[in-house]
Length: 304
Image 1 (cartoon, rainbow, N blue to C red):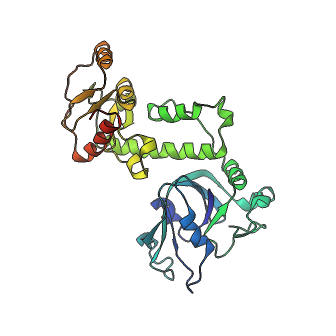
Image 2: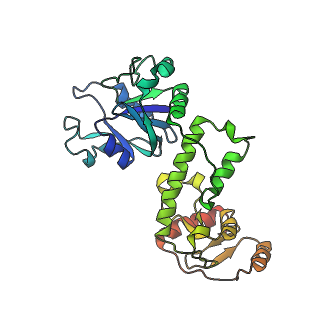
Image 3: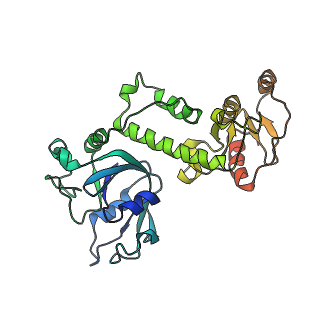
């Protein structure tokens, strides 16, 4: 699904904090469809941030809607709102060139919802509308106006993502507008993960290589099986030399909490021998927080 949030008043706090928040009802106790829409959001939905007459950011829902206290970040803003409302976590991507939908209204007005539209067909905002559902056609047009481009990366950090995008596609021209947004957001999340990981791990524990330019930020609990907070948790993985990452990522090797390297099959020993990797070896113990993910990795690939 696709969404448009009007949040001029709390834009700065919500973009910086990675969320959107609304009351559950109007001040008079009446239901508000744009507040009810918060409960309809799902992980993976795309959302457009509209404030000060411009689309300034595009995001992706990363956690289900939950009941939550009004953010303290709001300060005196929204003093007339109730203290408890709906919270949806968002991974935001700020646009390099924010744009005014009103400047393109002739192009997009036919795609605006007939009911509960976020803006009027004149391009002016709709008072009282916070979160509005929009269609894919409007979403695609907005993404084109945002000028988000897909650019494959050669960095080891993004090797899996680029491979997934390539699979089944004859050319990158077939990447959809929504794919472009998700690709940008995924790389932003991966960047957060790598930063957090580098605060915990300083080198490849197997080869000893410490030059991070040549190391891969590898997840112990795979990306596709992780919820958002696990994707960015620095305890969920290791910095590994590319050839060691290949073994770990595919489940050919794993590690116990005490640092013992585990090998899945006999033929992997030959690979380690050819690569000059000592086995058996101990790479040093892991923390309890890291063991949560390593135990998942061992179970997933049936080391225990």
